[in-house]
Length: 231
Picture (cartoon, rainbow, N blue to C red):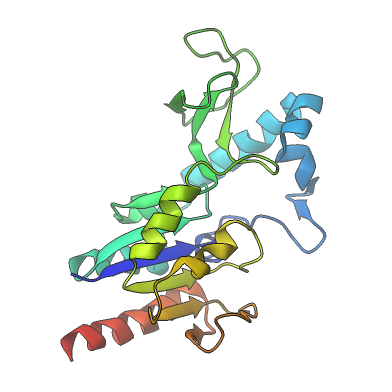
């Protein structure tokens, strides 16, 4: 069974109604990104950060996977599928995907401010005064700007094992995720699905671009790769 590795970004979740990470002005839901997604912002105003992620968490309870998520889950019948996602929602899991690696953390988890490996499932509001068993304040389990990406090594390994590598709904501007393409094996089929695809200078001749929204593009991709394994 061929190994299909898929890197997903905000574009796939946008079709379910979740807001994209930030707009052209660098704002996230009206907030300066560094105020709500950096260690410094958390130190300055933890209440603002908690309130921000509490709203994101509430929103996540209300949205459902879209056709794009469902197609990726269904492809597990014919491929060994691993999803590397920049998204912090659980829509891939809700759709039925069984191998999902979250590069930037997860909204439905929190972690200790003193022990990053102490990660706890959490689906309600998180506030000042919520502690772990050792009385350390809990914080959102989100990789903020300036922080290491703990899952990066595993993402690189998965990418290097791919027989087919697909990028869906991301601008390929946020590193280190944007650099994963460089770790694919030579001659690996590469697909890029996005209505406004970014330029990929170093691999442009190898990448097949499908300039569609995630759900439409993934339906096209499904037909292409299923046809290839039948022929």
